[in-house]
Image 1 (cartoon, rainbow, N blue to C red):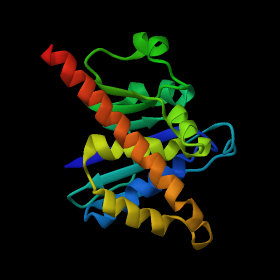
Image 2 (image 1 turned 45 degrees about the horizontal axis):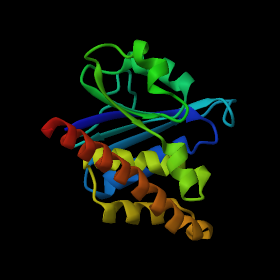
Image 3 (image 1 turned 180 degrees about the vertical axis):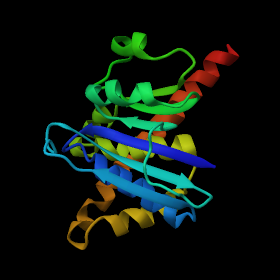
Length: 195
């Protein structure tokens, strides 16, 4: 088992935090992991990304050229990374900033599975618009099943600095909202296929 993940979006969307949290959760679950943030001069407002490799075997290099999983938080990231997706890969797309109808012609046929998740709207519905990144992490958790919710909670407590523990509950609610959205999408598809 191996996941080569790139998380990408605008600076200020919590992209690096999301990648770090996923990596830490996978490590606590017992996997080999690497986490490589890409810092640039455009940190706030421009695009930024990080790579996370999760494997049950030793990882030789932290670099990812052809990811098999993407978390895409904005349109420039969609344009940059979707062409690099491995065939059969999976993509979580922030559908509030990347509308499915706007990019349907840019998704290569048979390239992978795309999950359009309105992470901004989900976070805003909780009164925490800055936690769209945790909604995306929740979607990743539900799609992959790589780690348990209890492990994620433990990782979140570790990743949040001691002075920021007041954000633990809001972060968990955003995480749960993203996971619930994937469940609802799967349930609605199941109902349609039966009818």
